[in-house]
Length: 88
Image 1 (cartoon, rainbow, N blue to C red):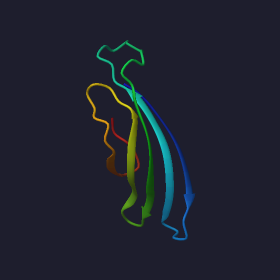
Image 2: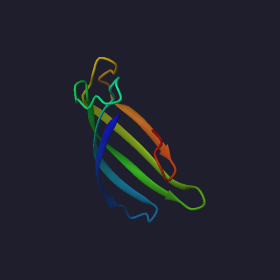
Image 3: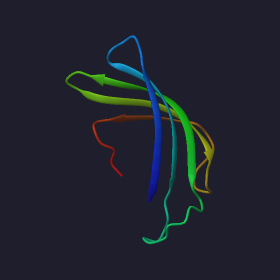
Image 4: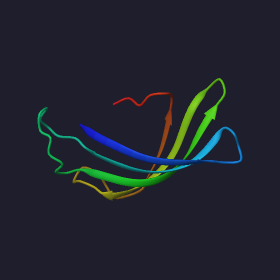
Protein backbone atom coordinates (compact mmCIF):
# COMPACT_ATOMS: atom_id res chain seq x y z
CA UNK A 1 0.00 0.00 0.00
CA UNK A 2 1.21 3.48 -0.83
CA UNK A 3 -0.60 6.75 -0.27
CA UNK A 4 0.07 10.47 -0.09
CA UNK A 5 -1.94 13.57 0.79
CA UNK A 6 -1.38 17.26 0.12
CA UNK A 7 -3.57 19.56 2.20
CA UNK A 8 -3.96 23.31 2.55
CA UNK A 9 -6.09 24.75 5.35
CA UNK A 10 -7.07 28.26 6.38
CA UNK A 11 -8.44 29.54 9.68
CA UNK A 12 -12.05 30.58 10.16
CA UNK A 13 -13.45 33.23 12.50
CA UNK A 14 -14.06 30.38 14.96
CA UNK A 15 -10.92 29.35 16.88
CA UNK A 16 -11.75 25.64 16.83
CA UNK A 17 -12.39 25.31 13.06
CA UNK A 18 -10.35 25.43 9.85
CA UNK A 19 -11.41 24.97 6.22
CA UNK A 20 -9.24 22.64 4.15
CA UNK A 21 -8.79 21.53 0.56
CA UNK A 22 -6.80 18.42 -0.28
CA UNK A 23 -5.54 15.98 -2.91
CA UNK A 24 -5.08 12.26 -2.13
CA UNK A 25 -3.43 9.53 -4.19
CA UNK A 26 -2.89 5.87 -3.38
CA UNK A 27 -2.52 2.34 -4.64
CA UNK A 28 -2.87 -1.14 -3.10
CA UNK A 29 -0.95 -3.97 -4.76
CA UNK A 30 -1.42 -7.71 -4.29
CA UNK A 31 2.25 -8.58 -3.80
CA UNK A 32 4.35 -7.19 -0.95
CA UNK A 33 7.19 -6.01 -3.20
CA UNK A 34 5.09 -4.79 -6.13
CA UNK A 35 5.71 -1.04 -6.29
CA UNK A 36 3.81 -0.30 -9.52
CA UNK A 37 1.24 2.48 -9.73
CA UNK A 38 -1.10 0.52 -12.02
CA UNK A 39 -4.67 0.83 -10.75
CA UNK A 40 -4.03 3.87 -8.57
CA UNK A 41 -6.86 6.05 -7.23
CA UNK A 42 -6.79 9.79 -6.59
CA UNK A 43 -9.27 12.44 -5.51
CA UNK A 44 -9.70 16.09 -4.56
CA UNK A 45 -11.89 17.42 -1.82
CA UNK A 46 -12.85 19.98 0.77
CA UNK A 47 -13.26 19.61 4.49
CA UNK A 48 -13.56 21.11 7.93
CA UNK A 49 -10.97 20.55 10.67
CA UNK A 50 -12.38 20.85 14.18
CA UNK A 51 -10.36 20.87 17.40
CA UNK A 52 -12.92 20.23 20.13
CA UNK A 53 -11.73 20.61 23.75
CA UNK A 54 -11.77 17.35 25.76
CA UNK A 55 -12.70 15.40 22.60
CA UNK A 56 -9.81 16.01 20.21
CA UNK A 57 -9.55 16.60 16.46
CA UNK A 58 -12.37 15.76 14.06
CA UNK A 59 -12.06 15.88 10.25
CA UNK A 60 -15.18 16.16 8.09
CA UNK A 61 -14.30 15.69 4.41
CA UNK A 62 -16.02 15.33 1.06
CA UNK A 63 -13.89 13.97 -1.79
CA UNK A 64 -14.56 13.55 -5.50
CA UNK A 65 -12.55 10.87 -7.34
CA UNK A 66 -10.41 11.88 -10.31
CA UNK A 67 -9.13 8.41 -11.22
CA UNK A 68 -10.56 5.08 -10.04
CA UNK A 69 -9.71 1.45 -10.64
CA UNK A 70 -12.08 -1.46 -11.32
CA UNK A 71 -12.80 -1.95 -7.59
CA UNK A 72 -14.10 1.56 -6.86
CA UNK A 73 -16.95 3.62 -8.25
CA UNK A 74 -16.64 7.21 -9.44
CA UNK A 75 -19.00 8.86 -6.96
CA UNK A 76 -18.11 11.41 -4.31
CA UNK A 77 -17.78 10.27 -0.72
CA UNK A 78 -18.15 11.81 2.73
CA UNK A 79 -15.58 10.80 5.37
CA UNK A 80 -15.41 11.41 9.14
CA UNK A 81 -12.11 10.87 10.98
CA UNK A 82 -11.54 11.32 14.71
CA UNK A 83 -8.30 11.20 16.66
CA UNK A 84 -4.66 12.10 16.41
CA UNK A 85 -3.55 9.32 14.04
CA UNK A 86 -4.85 7.58 10.94
CA UNK A 87 -4.98 3.80 11.04
CA UNK A 88 -4.12 1.75 7.97
